[in-house]
Image (cartoon, rainbow, N blue to C red):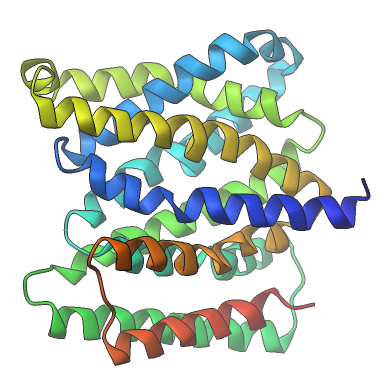
Length: 288
């Protein structure tokens, strides 16, 4: 299959998987704290990957491990906790919309740190996207007094972490297989995740029915939304550009909003406008 066809297939599959991740996080938070959820997601994913991909670690050269560690923390560790904490206070659909700022961050960080060239239109796209995010946050805070939209900033930080991650992988790890990168990432994160989990009350509440149910949701999230999705994503980065790969976040709000409606979430007219402005900004920033 040609790379052009493959990258669009990967993009669609990733959109469906990652767009569904936000509702799984929401369900997981019913019985778990954000720190428990983030830790279990990493632990489940690491266990699965070390079983199927342990041999692939031998392909990672010694000098590449520092970049494996960097991408592990920027692309998985910090976002896993930041999105979970934010979603305690804002809707899953809003979380997904803010995640669509990743291509904007990819452009900004790529241009300022990694020497990525950009056009004036893309710069305006960045500004438009940021304005849309501000409208989403401010209107959400005004119309949902029961939700603390200051925590939306954590989702934006997580999106920027993803932006750093995609640039690092493209520049420093393009010669490694996606399975090697993904397994290496989670081998690095397994111990930190276990340490964080040990400082929560997880082992005291693990017997509760709601905790067991939440763990099932996080198991699905870890294997599909983390393991399988990361392998596909790293392959997509290698066969395309950082901005194209990060544009998977265009479609996440659509998928997440569909799940959110089924779960009783709705956006206000101004939030619809903010979402549209974000997507217009992202589209302009990613166009060549």
